Length: 140
Image 1: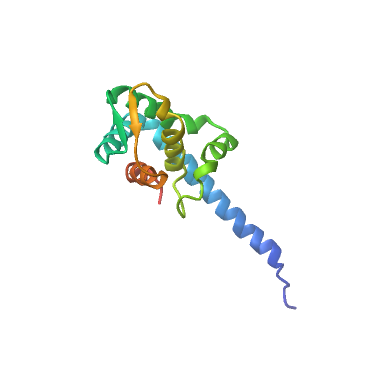
Image 2: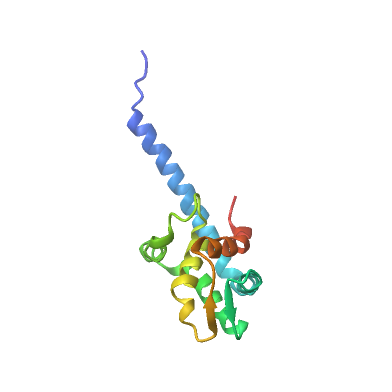
């Protein structure tokens, strides 16, 4: 007798498998960012300065602020992360969630840092600079 396959059940299994894979990748990404926050912050601030995205009078306080933000998502709720990136979540296809989070921080919060004189470029320019550094820790 032929076995009847429920397409809904099969689709749900596939979706669940994709969700589990993304969640695992996200945990690995956030863990690596937390563990290497200081090194990543140094490279990231240097990249932002080199690409003329930020203008600052002191890089060290900016590096410390970025390092704090790199450590934060590992302990944050999913809702808070999604809320932070809501305005820019459609910026690129298949985005790095951590790059989106740091981009949102730079655009929305870092501008208020007393050591930042100005932030230049569009949101996509900031994302590309951030992702060029953070893509190295993204699981494949």
